[in-house]
Image 1 (tube, rainbow, N blue to C red):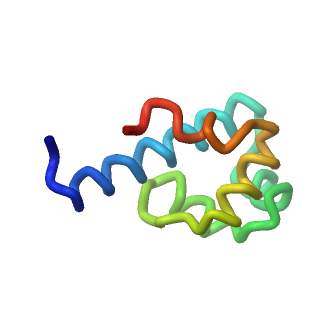
Image 2 (cartoon, rainbow, N blue to C red; image 1 turned 180 degrees about the horizontal axis):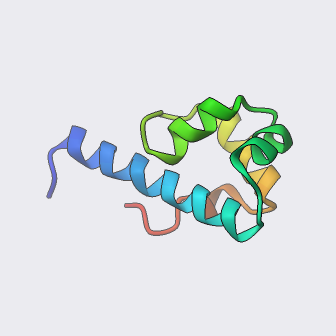
Length: 78
């Protein structure tokens, strides 16, 4: 098992990858997606790179903008 900080960093990267894939599958640029989610574009980039620990409210905004449940964003993350 990974040490806690390593595990958390890996989880953030996977979350970001899931969000990026869904966004790209919808054919949205980061800018278009950020506008839909009402979140700053640079913040979206940081999330997608796994550099940000997202607040739950922003997770809800992202899920809504992607048209998925929050649980779908965390698919494959343990």
